Length: 436
Image (spheres, rainbow, N blue to C red):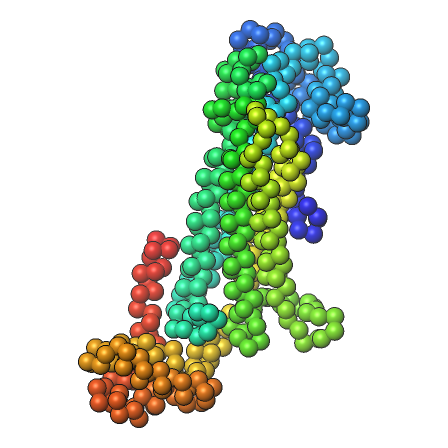
């Protein structure tokens, strides 16, 4: 992933040094367990840990140089460790195959990455909740098809986003559990040359579950589900980012990304204040979703194992988690600093001459004894006059002048149907459902 969209803590998880450290722990824990059941001498495991405790530096360049000759990354790593540890290192990797190391390591890296993503989501949820509470009863217009519909509150918009990201977090917790599996089963997964107790020991040491049937590789449906979950979270990011982008349009301008002192919106037009952060988030969401299809295609492997998935995961593991980590952090900042304009929201609410209250009048006429079809026709013909006047006409005044309406409703009853607070009587219920 390019540095522009990367944060250091997530990047470290995918750096070669961390990968090799995890490889060593897998090998050393396995050697410990092999010693416990008498397959290798206890001195072999002790030699590994003694070297590890006194030599924390991983020479990535040296390992890469060996791989340039062996053309095999795990063999290169084992060769390098053997050069450091000495003769006792020959007992390392007894009965194991490369996938035992690679797949188990990937599980550890993905769980490490997921823990950061969960912390990211907690920060985002806290920011959204804070702004939702702040604007719980701030009136704004609800839109369907991009057109004024009926009044809602800005807090309700944010409550919806909170609920969506809370679901995403729950899915991520489940995805973490599904991906956190260990396989130390040897060639084609039969345990022919290594006891299942070794797998159980390594899994416990690394905080993983045991893969029931690994067939030499951990089944990639687990990974497909994981990356699909990241894709759904990315789509939720895009949904909220798109809402901010629409609200920042000049004709709307109900909310706006924070514009810092000294910031420039355009190289040509000094007046510009563009929604660059949320536009960026839209693009990053596309990238994360783009990693989902390769993960799905990785599920189908030849027989017990091939490596068609390997090159894919070397890309998508780092890129998907690094990109999502950055995007969640950026969205949290956008929401935390979002400029919100209640006066403009009220102005937009009032812009179309009360059209947003048409349903209440429709229902009142049906309750007064007029058929729904006729009630709809009566309200619509008055509403169209308001549309055609671009809000210069008042729906309330037109209805008061319509004999079909006044035959069934008094002026006070008509006015009552234009009470904005009526639409907000269940906001507390919605907030209780979302926030508890």
